[in-house]
Length: 315
Image 1 (cartoon, rainbow, N blue to C red):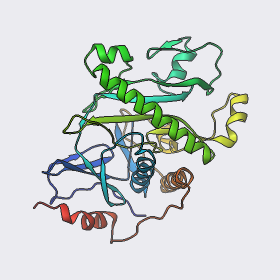
Image 2 (cartoon, one colour):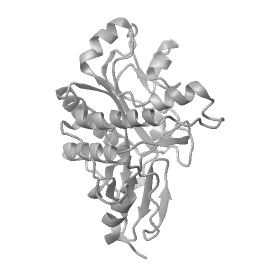
Image 3 (cartoon, rainbow, N blue to C red):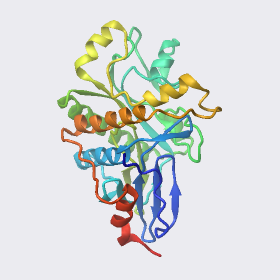
Image 4 (spheres, one colour):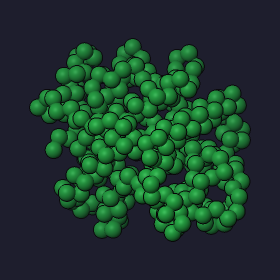
């Protein structure tokens, strides 16, 4: 089981290690973003899942290439299956969450708020009488503050964002237009593959010239909710959760056995990690329509990544 737990490469400059991605800022304004196989939940790392980093990088690549005519993005190249070479951006402090269905499980999700009787949310008014997981009359943007350094995202409205100076009106108009058009493209292409793109999040940043570029990732299994279209209508009629890429099996297993925010995490069974790895690779194949081929070159994944990134070494 080939796993990239952490991409520590001393020859690369200016490291920053996030929950899942390990980053190195090059002197010329470019950034190397390495997707590890770490699985993060409950504000901690639970385990590492084989091929997860390659899947996320390559699914995002598929979507970046399929949407480049809608919105410019930060990608400059792919030196390795787990690595993006991108422009370093000033990340905008607003996360653009687009929702096409009345779904979600968190306290700030529109389904949770709707069940509580709330109809006004995120600057939108939803009609009454919607079923759980029903399609919204039209996709909506439910923006949140972009929390840095472990903070928590907070719900926002478009009016708040402009009034508080998080974005200018022109910036808001641009990212809102990009977000809805990206989501429409994503839903259209997902539909062709027997999938429903339910909701997703986008991050944008400014380049040196002040242009707005799409950053981070796009329409991956981690940043987006997908349902399997074939079982959706039956689930909607019965009031059950539509079938999906159930990558949260580890999260649910941990939550059943401890307080994941306070207690030590029990050892996660190898078969559960392997099952989650299969879910990610199956998601790749269903989303992209192509077989997943793991890159098995190099003695380890880290050895392969180091070899492919040697041209960027500075020490």
